[in-house]
Image (tube, rainbow, N blue to C red; front, top):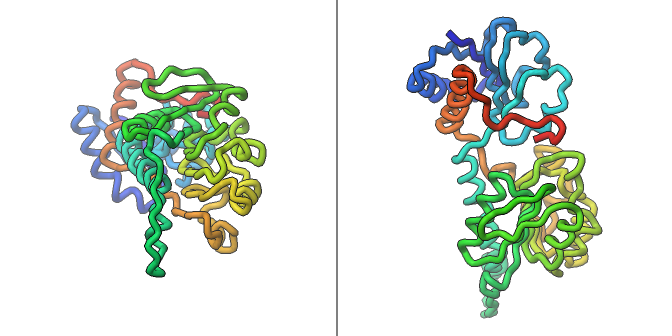
Length: 309
């Protein structure tokens, strides 16, 4: 019998208890999944960064910590976490992100905000270019960024992807490294941020890189708040270098009521809802990974502590 600790906010237990037990029963694994196991008895931890476990040192028997979140930046530097840490790669989370990113890409491309807000009776014909004339750049081409890139390409947009290391992705012009970053951003009309938060990616959009974009470009950030230098973005919005920013993530969440993003006419704030973990599919992913470990197979999606993702 495996002892599996569920360490997330208490209200999430009611959502996850059924799917987790069903997944383990289907897999034929006997597991006691609970919120109150003694640390020394725990074989695996199902973990969310806002849950109760912050000190992993008492969990001496624990074989792995499996995150319910795609991002691990808030726990990867925890000095007590010596067990393998697995991030969540869930097709449902990816699908949700694709839908959100594609929707806002089309919203900005078509100029929907202008028509929705215009109520003064003026017949003003504005025609957007065809998608093939609107270059889109995606910073971050992991599972989420690559999937969004394929969906946007399918709509006709020319897509450039960028990451720190070289990749080959179908339908996407892929660049990497510092020189590649400048080339990827130069002339981009829509920029989508889906990078992990690391020291190397913090403030990747700053005064210098924002100046590379096509005038009036759109920024869409469902990745991580610290990827953007907020002061630089506000200045670019005020000058018109950036036409609009749709932001789902922020350095401080919830976004403070006094933050200038709330009142800025060229900023859309959404409350970190671009995509979320779905209990039914997340339970299956976690069960599969634990099954692999118990069968002597390597865990999937183990975090590289040096790269921080």
